[in-house]
Amino acid sequence: MKKVTALTTQKRNKNRVNVYLDGEFAFGLPAIVAARLSLGQLLSEADIARLQKENALETAKEQALRYLTYRPRSRTELRRYLQQKGHEPETITAVLDRLTDLNLIDDKAFARYWVEQRETFRPRSKIALQQELMAKGVSREAIEAAIETVDELDAARKAAQKQLYRWRNLPEQAFKTKLGQFLQRRGFGYEIILEIIDELWQATNTKSDT
Image (cartoon, rainbow, N blue to C red):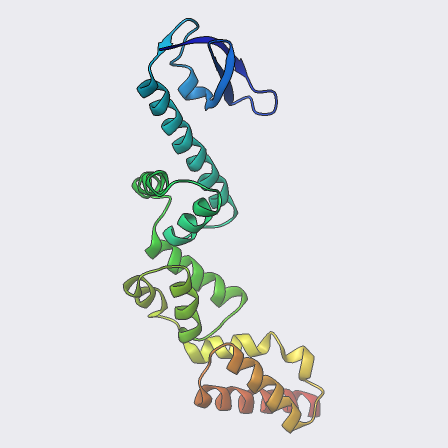
Protein backbone atom coordinates (compact mmCIF):
# COMPACT_ATOMS: atom_id res chain seq x y z
CA MET A 1 0.00 0.00 0.00
CA LYS A 2 1.14 3.53 -0.70
CA LYS A 3 0.05 6.69 1.09
CA VAL A 4 -1.11 9.90 -0.58
CA THR A 5 1.25 12.51 0.86
CA ALA A 6 0.50 15.54 -1.34
CA LEU A 7 -1.99 16.76 -3.93
CA THR A 8 -0.90 19.89 -5.80
CA THR A 9 -2.52 21.75 -8.67
CA GLN A 10 -0.31 21.88 -11.74
CA LYS A 11 1.02 25.36 -12.52
CA ARG A 12 0.43 25.14 -16.26
CA ASN A 13 -2.92 23.40 -16.11
CA LYS A 14 -5.26 24.23 -13.26
CA ASN A 15 -7.49 21.33 -14.24
CA ARG A 16 -4.85 18.76 -13.37
CA VAL A 17 -3.40 17.66 -10.04
CA ASN A 18 -0.02 16.11 -9.24
CA VAL A 19 -0.31 13.12 -6.92
CA TYR A 20 2.55 12.27 -4.54
CA LEU A 21 2.77 8.84 -2.94
CA ASP A 22 5.09 8.20 0.00
CA GLY A 23 6.69 11.60 -0.55
CA GLU A 24 7.46 11.15 -4.24
CA PHE A 25 5.67 12.34 -7.37
CA ALA A 26 3.66 9.43 -8.76
CA PHE A 27 1.42 10.70 -11.55
CA GLY A 28 -0.92 13.45 -12.65
CA LEU A 29 -4.70 13.24 -12.65
CA PRO A 30 -7.59 15.35 -13.92
CA ALA A 31 -8.88 17.46 -11.02
CA ILE A 32 -12.27 15.75 -11.23
CA VAL A 33 -10.60 12.37 -10.56
CA ALA A 34 -8.12 13.67 -7.98
CA ALA A 35 -11.04 15.15 -6.01
CA ARG A 36 -11.80 11.63 -4.76
CA LEU A 37 -8.38 11.38 -3.10
CA SER A 38 -7.40 12.73 0.30
CA LEU A 39 -4.13 13.19 2.17
CA GLY A 40 -3.17 10.11 4.12
CA GLN A 41 -5.32 7.82 1.97
CA LEU A 42 -3.80 4.41 1.31
CA LEU A 43 -3.79 3.09 -2.23
CA SER A 44 -3.25 -0.47 -3.35
CA GLU A 45 -1.59 -1.36 -6.64
CA ALA A 46 -5.06 -2.04 -8.03
CA ASP A 47 -6.22 1.42 -6.90
CA ILE A 48 -3.23 3.06 -8.58
CA ALA A 49 -3.79 1.12 -11.80
CA ARG A 50 -7.44 2.16 -11.82
CA LEU A 51 -6.53 5.83 -11.31
CA GLN A 52 -3.98 5.70 -14.09
CA LYS A 53 -6.57 4.13 -16.38
CA GLU A 54 -9.01 6.92 -15.55
CA ASN A 55 -6.27 9.44 -16.25
CA ALA A 56 -5.63 7.90 -19.66
CA LEU A 57 -9.35 7.97 -20.46
CA GLU A 58 -9.80 11.60 -19.40
CA THR A 59 -6.66 12.71 -21.22
CA ALA A 60 -7.74 10.96 -24.42
CA LYS A 61 -11.24 12.39 -24.15
CA GLU A 62 -9.92 15.93 -23.68
CA GLN A 63 -7.63 15.55 -26.68
CA ALA A 64 -10.48 14.20 -28.80
CA LEU A 65 -12.77 17.06 -27.79
CA ARG A 66 -10.12 19.62 -28.69
CA TYR A 67 -9.64 17.91 -32.05
CA LEU A 68 -13.38 18.16 -32.65
CA THR A 69 -13.43 21.92 -32.05
CA TYR A 70 -11.80 22.57 -35.43
CA ARG A 71 -14.42 20.67 -37.44
CA PRO A 72 -16.49 17.48 -37.21
CA ARG A 73 -14.51 14.25 -37.57
CA SER A 74 -15.25 10.70 -38.56
CA ARG A 75 -14.74 7.94 -36.02
CA THR A 76 -11.74 6.70 -37.99
CA GLU A 77 -10.16 10.16 -38.06
CA LEU A 78 -10.43 10.39 -34.28
CA ARG A 79 -9.09 6.88 -33.81
CA ARG A 80 -6.04 7.66 -35.94
CA TYR A 81 -5.48 10.93 -34.07
CA LEU A 82 -5.58 9.24 -30.65
CA GLN A 83 -3.30 6.48 -31.91
CA GLN A 84 -0.79 9.15 -32.92
CA LYS A 85 -1.04 10.52 -29.38
CA GLY A 86 0.09 7.14 -28.09
CA HIS A 87 -3.09 5.91 -26.41
CA GLU A 88 -3.85 2.23 -25.96
CA PRO A 89 -6.49 0.63 -28.22
CA GLU A 90 -8.74 -0.11 -25.22
CA THR A 91 -8.62 3.53 -24.12
CA ILE A 92 -9.32 4.80 -27.63
CA THR A 93 -12.32 2.53 -28.13
CA ALA A 94 -13.78 3.54 -24.76
CA VAL A 95 -13.43 7.24 -25.59
CA LEU A 96 -14.89 6.85 -29.07
CA ASP A 97 -17.85 4.89 -27.70
CA ARG A 98 -18.46 7.60 -25.10
CA LEU A 99 -18.34 10.39 -27.67
CA THR A 100 -20.65 8.40 -29.94
CA ASP A 101 -23.15 8.05 -27.07
CA LEU A 102 -23.01 11.84 -26.68
CA ASN A 103 -23.65 12.26 -30.43
CA LEU A 104 -20.29 13.99 -30.82
CA ILE A 105 -19.26 11.33 -33.31
CA ASP A 106 -21.76 10.45 -36.02
CA ASP A 107 -20.35 9.24 -39.32
CA LYS A 108 -23.62 9.78 -41.19
CA ALA A 109 -23.81 13.40 -40.02
CA PHE A 110 -20.10 13.82 -40.76
CA ALA A 111 -20.56 12.56 -44.32
CA ARG A 112 -23.40 15.04 -44.88
CA TYR A 113 -21.28 17.85 -43.44
CA TRP A 114 -18.33 16.95 -45.67
CA VAL A 115 -20.44 16.87 -48.84
CA GLU A 116 -22.14 20.18 -47.96
CA GLN A 117 -18.78 21.85 -47.34
CA ARG A 118 -17.40 20.55 -50.60
CA GLU A 119 -20.47 21.68 -52.52
CA THR A 120 -20.10 25.17 -51.07
CA PHE A 121 -16.35 25.69 -51.27
CA ARG A 122 -14.73 23.03 -53.48
CA PRO A 123 -17.36 21.26 -55.62
CA ARG A 124 -16.36 17.88 -57.00
CA SER A 125 -17.82 14.69 -58.44
CA LYS A 126 -19.59 11.95 -56.56
CA ILE A 127 -16.64 9.63 -57.17
CA ALA A 128 -14.20 12.15 -55.71
CA LEU A 129 -16.43 12.69 -52.67
CA GLN A 130 -16.76 8.94 -52.23
CA GLN A 131 -13.00 8.47 -52.32
CA GLU A 132 -12.42 11.24 -49.78
CA LEU A 133 -14.97 9.85 -47.35
CA MET A 134 -13.73 6.28 -47.76
CA ALA A 135 -10.24 7.51 -46.88
CA LYS A 136 -11.74 8.87 -43.67
CA GLY A 137 -13.21 5.49 -42.81
CA VAL A 138 -16.85 6.32 -43.46
CA SER A 139 -19.06 3.37 -44.37
CA ARG A 140 -20.29 2.92 -47.92
CA GLU A 141 -23.89 3.17 -46.69
CA ALA A 142 -23.28 6.56 -45.05
CA ILE A 143 -21.40 7.80 -48.11
CA GLU A 144 -24.13 6.78 -50.54
CA ALA A 145 -26.76 8.53 -48.43
CA ALA A 146 -24.68 11.71 -48.29
CA ILE A 147 -23.90 11.95 -52.01
CA GLU A 148 -27.30 10.79 -53.22
CA THR A 149 -28.61 14.32 -53.86
CA VAL A 150 -25.42 15.72 -55.40
CA ASP A 151 -26.12 17.20 -58.84
CA GLU A 152 -22.85 16.53 -60.66
CA LEU A 153 -23.62 18.87 -63.55
CA ASP A 154 -24.34 21.72 -61.16
CA ALA A 155 -21.28 20.85 -59.06
CA ALA A 156 -19.06 20.88 -62.16
CA ARG A 157 -20.51 24.21 -63.23
CA LYS A 158 -19.88 25.77 -59.81
CA ALA A 159 -16.36 24.37 -59.66
CA ALA A 160 -15.55 25.69 -63.13
CA GLN A 161 -17.06 29.12 -62.50
CA LYS A 162 -14.73 29.59 -59.54
CA GLN A 163 -11.77 29.18 -61.92
CA LEU A 164 -12.95 31.24 -64.90
CA TYR A 165 -10.94 34.30 -63.89
CA ARG A 166 -7.75 32.31 -64.56
CA TRP A 167 -8.50 31.38 -68.16
CA ARG A 168 -11.21 33.69 -69.47
CA ASN A 169 -8.79 35.53 -71.77
CA LEU A 170 -7.30 32.41 -73.35
CA PRO A 171 -8.07 31.26 -76.90
CA GLU A 172 -10.88 28.71 -77.15
CA GLN A 173 -8.74 25.57 -77.33
CA ALA A 174 -6.47 26.60 -74.47
CA PHE A 175 -9.50 27.68 -72.41
CA LYS A 176 -11.24 24.35 -72.89
CA THR A 177 -8.08 22.34 -72.26
CA LYS A 178 -7.28 24.10 -69.00
CA LEU A 179 -10.85 23.97 -67.74
CA GLY A 180 -11.28 20.36 -68.82
CA GLN A 181 -8.12 19.26 -67.03
CA PHE A 182 -9.24 21.06 -63.90
CA LEU A 183 -12.65 19.36 -63.91
CA GLN A 184 -11.01 16.00 -64.59
CA ARG A 185 -8.88 16.47 -61.45
CA ARG A 186 -12.10 17.08 -59.55
CA GLY A 187 -13.30 13.67 -60.69
CA PHE A 188 -15.95 14.65 -63.22
CA GLY A 189 -16.77 12.43 -66.16
CA TYR A 190 -16.04 13.12 -69.83
CA GLU A 191 -19.61 13.98 -70.88
CA ILE A 192 -20.13 16.43 -68.03
CA ILE A 193 -16.77 18.07 -68.71
CA LEU A 194 -17.59 18.55 -72.41
CA GLU A 195 -20.97 20.06 -71.61
CA ILE A 196 -19.60 22.48 -69.03
CA ILE A 197 -16.57 23.70 -70.98
CA ASP A 198 -18.75 24.34 -74.05
CA GLU A 199 -21.37 26.09 -71.95
CA LEU A 200 -18.89 28.33 -70.16
CA TRP A 201 -16.89 29.09 -73.29
CA GLN A 202 -20.08 30.27 -74.98
CA ALA A 203 -21.12 32.29 -71.93
CA THR A 204 -17.70 33.88 -71.55
CA ASN A 205 -17.30 34.54 -75.26
CA THR A 206 -20.76 36.10 -75.49
CA LYS A 207 -20.00 38.46 -72.60
CA SER A 208 -16.70 39.41 -74.22
CA ASP A 209 -18.48 40.30 -77.47
CA THR A 210 -21.05 42.55 -75.84
